[in-house]
Amino acid sequence: MKHALPTLTYDYDALEPYIDAKTMEIHYSKHHQAYVDKLNGVLDKYPELQEKKAEDLLKDLDKLQVSDADRNAIRNNGGGYVNHSFFWTMMGPKKEIDQKLTEEVTKTFNSFEEFKKLFSDTAASRFGSGWAWLVRDGAGKLVVYSTANQDSPLSQGHTPLVCLDVWEHAYYLKYQNRRPEYIDNWWHVFKLL
Ligand code: MN
Image 1: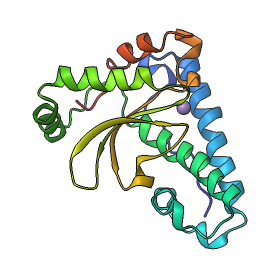
Image 2 (image 1 turned 60 degrees about the horizontal axis):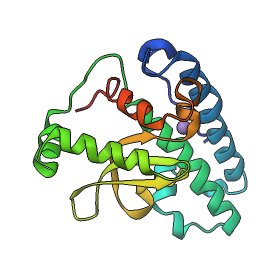
Image 3 (image 1 turned 180 degrees about the vertical axis):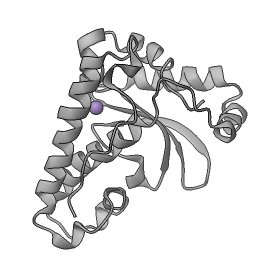
Image 4 (image 1 turned 90 degrees about the horizontal axis):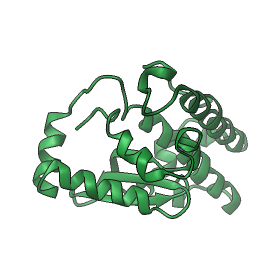
């Protein structure tokens, strides 16, 4: 079984003017596709791993019977594949508020505004390339943090609930070095809370 790009449920220009169509096109059809292709390339060597879901490869990353170089390639490209597939579902032209999650976030972080500030600050201060996350940790608690590169919270036993890509490829065409402005604007197309 080869992994494949998920279908985008909206057009490249659906998130304009906050996320521009060109960025969406390149991000999805080039960057995301490259992670899928490279993951499939590594897995060519391991037929038994091709049957597993990419999420499960990330959950079991430390236990996989693979070389260190291939483990690293699965971390990076499996992470790139899974993280982006999830990221596209965070956004849309219409709000699809998750009422239950909204209530839990409000309760945990005192208000939606406080959550938003913590999440935005976490995304802005990630050094270099990476992601900001809201996750449910192993104890069931909601936590905000960031990861480097394409590292997935799944690899530390956490369940991702919200993610934001802060790699430069996610915003550079429109925002250049203005990552905080990209983050502020991203909330306009974030649909869950
Ligand atoms: Mn990306």
